[in-house]
Amino acid sequence: MKSTENVLRRRKKFKNWDLIIFMGPYLITFFVFTVLPVFVSFFLSFTNFNMLETPDFVGLQNYIKLFLNDEVFSGAVQTTLILGIITGPVGYLMSFAFAWLLNEVPAKPRSFLTLLFYAPSLAGGFVTVWTLLFSGDSNGYINAWLLEWGVITEPIIFLKDTNYMFTVCVIIILWQSLGMSFLTFISGLQTVDKSLYEAGAVDGIKNRWQELYFITLPYMRGQLMFGAIMSITNAFNAGSLITSIFGYPTQDYALQTIMNHLDDYGSMRYEMGYASTIAVFLFALSFVANKLVQFLLSRIGK
Amino acid sequence: MSTKIATVFGRINPKNLFKKSPRDEEPSVENGTVLPTEGKENKKKKERKRFHYKRMNRSLGGDIAFFLFLFIASLFFAFPMVFAVSNSLKKMNELFLFPPTLIVREPTLKNYADLFNIMANSLVPMSKYIFNTIFITFFGTLFRVLSASMCAYPLSKRNFRGRNFIFALSTYALMFTPTAATVSNYIIMANLGWIDTFWSILIPALGSAFSLYLIKGFIDGFPDSVLEAARIDGAGEFKIFWSILMPSIKPGWLTLIVFSVQEFWNTGSTIYIYKEELKTLSYALSQVAAAGIARQGVSMAISIVMMIVPVIVFVISQSNILETMATSGMKD
Image (cartoon, rainbow over all chains, first blue to last red; front, side, top):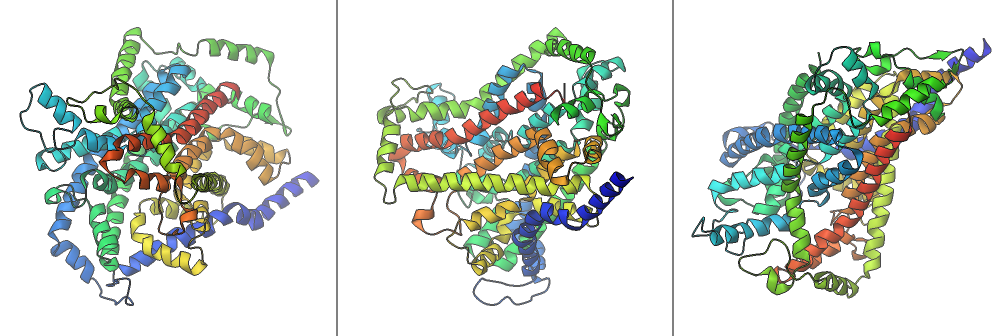
């Protein structure tokens, strides 16, 4: 009797002060360095803050300008969406597919292959490699090989020719896409209780596809959600990679993403009010995409 | 403690397979003590381990297709890496050869020697940059893993008011582009007086929503029954967290360590730090590479050198993840 009382008392106590110790460090820093700045940005999106004068409240003026009077922006939305729709789901599925395939491989070669697949992300971009490969003169490696083999007679200006830029960009993004989600999936697959598979075979699961759909995927829902959020964020934030390879601004704004537009106003023109408006729009876009993915993922294995 | 967990896990009833979540299992606890493992079960486990590679529902043709596909894919992913390594070993005249060579013909370590010489002659001693980077990487990673795991535990396993709100807020924070918050962050740092100190990098590491989300995903999969059993046994919340939960979600925090080390190791110039003696290795090396086309070979060498530490951490953590799973008995 007494021990039950003790347990009950401990639980009550936990609610009072243990929570503070457990969650305090995270919550305080999270609110100060993430939530607060985000709210400030929301607020700034209704002002014309230029970092020197005190911000003036301008109502919805920034939003009106963004949607009606900014042609570069509407192009950027298009580019971001198309790029996101291609690289986001493909990158996500690739991450899972490779993690799953690697899980079938015996442990030793698996570690090596994981390293190989993850290496592009470990290297933090290898931007120099890509600019060298796709360089527009005959010193660019791809151009040089194509010239040598007689496929082309004139070097192709991959990084400035709008016909090729998009494809090159997609290749580079996909090459890097086996990153965080991939590694999380690998660890997630490791935690799946292996005895479930044997039980599944007994219960009438016939092939590896059914095994995947009814056992593996439902078990890893936490990692799948995490991967989805990271994929969406990465797909919408490809801007910095694009700048480091194609330069800024890209030829004819062909690869201008929302992110680049934000950087343009935020860190070059110092129109923080307008930049915040763009950030709010980007946030809304990720929010919708995430809700959509959450809905799709919640239906898995049911 | 670990043997107890092993028992509980070993007793998951296969019939409950299609239940919503494996942590809904009944705890196999009698009178506050966990049942001892039976010898018979141990034997069965060993047998299973021997058949590890030969899982059910597999065909030979499928296996061959798998390996072929993996091989081709790995070529695509390894290519730029091979290219970088090979270029870092080329001499200047081979770098500008036409047609270019993919694999180096006369490998030389000259680029690495050059890099070393440039570093040795820098204004601020190179050891300072290296120390700064190691300091930031070590404490940044430690802060992140600890604070995220500690917060994720009650968030995942306790019921209290505001729990869903906190988690939803953290999730939404992941979707917000940090660039937009740069100015407000700078103002906050300046008011705290943390400009030109390492605090500006290390303290925000405590509040990483991304880490919280990652770790929580792993804790969610941990069965409640084990926690309940430990609580009945009289273990305090901190003991449960430290000696039961943390060892069990090792794959989770090892993965977080990989991400975190990688990010902090590559910390370049930030808007918070201006003193040269507080700058990082990545910053110093990017200055070296910025000297132009004549340093092409050296800049390739830099990419390779900067990769060494993250790769080592990656390899150690991966082999540890495999080891945990092989020995814990938890996941058979």
